[in-house]
Length: 95
Image (cartoon, rainbow, N blue to C red; front, side, top):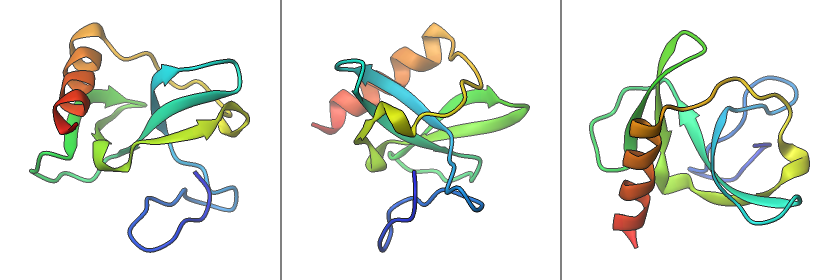
């Protein structure tokens, strides 16, 4: 996700990497993503998506953004249909 400003979710490490959930692809060049975290918070903006890379993970839907697909480096997992549908519904309910 790169280095961001203020309360935006930063990536970690030298490359600024952060796992994301791809919510919708618009073309081969751009897609909507939601940053993921292992931080447990109980609020409307942290949606449990299950186990990713062996850790319980949450989508931070308040940080949804459009990115260039060149930012995507590695595919680490597929989300099951139930968690993906729940996350998409929560995003739709925000708007």
